[in-house]
Image (cartoon, rainbow, N blue to C red):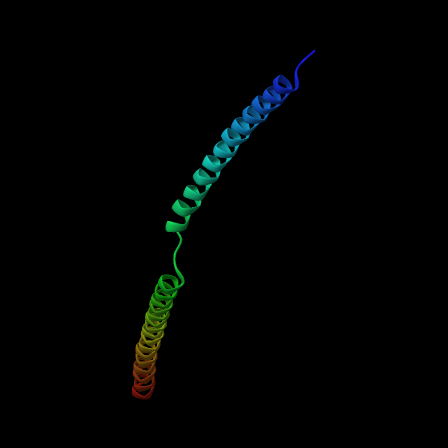
Length: 107
């Protein structure tokens, strides 16, 4: 038969062991949480903040407007070239018409 003292000592030893095991498990979990937190901090450092995004977005929008304006100017120049070409062709046609009319009158 086990004495009360031995029984209590064995229960205390079991509780101490359980406490040690629980403490080790809690430390292991906390280390895992700290690693996860460190990963989140690392990831957060790569994010663009709101002010940085707005600044870059405004710069990109401004550049897009410049490119659109440049494109419109190029299309306008192309249209002007077309008008100039048509004008020269019309003048050449007019000159040929006048020459043909003069030749018919002289005959």
